[in-house]
Image (tube, rainbow, N blue to C red; front, side, top):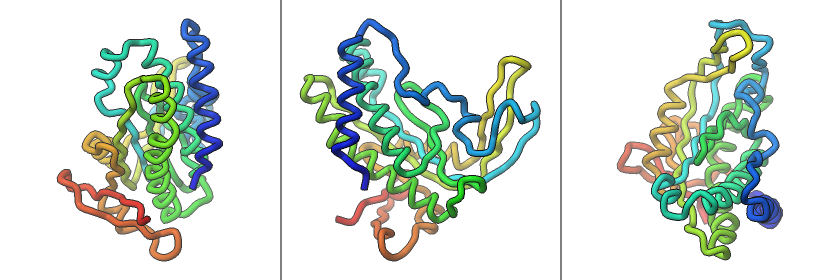
Length: 236
């Protein structure tokens, strides 16, 4: 379990800095501007050739804010800005705790990879890390982020989370001077789809359920969702 008190301390600091500097545009987090090549272990944009590719297996997690467009229109840009300075740092602390790799910050969501052949952890551990990360993201959202927003009378945030595991193609795209390393795969599409279907839930694929470890620290309940995914529920 992540340290809720420490994450709240960090989230409050980021939120208050944003609140105090509302007219200054700042980065959300120190690694928010890293390219995908810095997020995927072992893949450096400068060392890869254009059009080359490699494949690897990852647990892929998406988290996204529900009704984000309507929420932003309703509360306005300043409160949206402050909200994200509470939300993003808190979520990134949870990801860091579970050894995830931040692949993309998408404005109101995050894409994360777990595992891979160069990560030093097994696919079973990667699967469990992704699932536990998703559960703790929702816990931290409730206990930290929305606590801060409620104190400031700002519309609280609701999220969905989707997770799948599978093969990903990593390739370098662009031209000299303008390039990045990107990842493609069915598991990315599936995790994104399940994320869109989830409301205050962690939805995982059948593959994630099949790979989930049995025994101590592996106890979770899986309940079928109307989308065909499985709701990952923490046993209390």
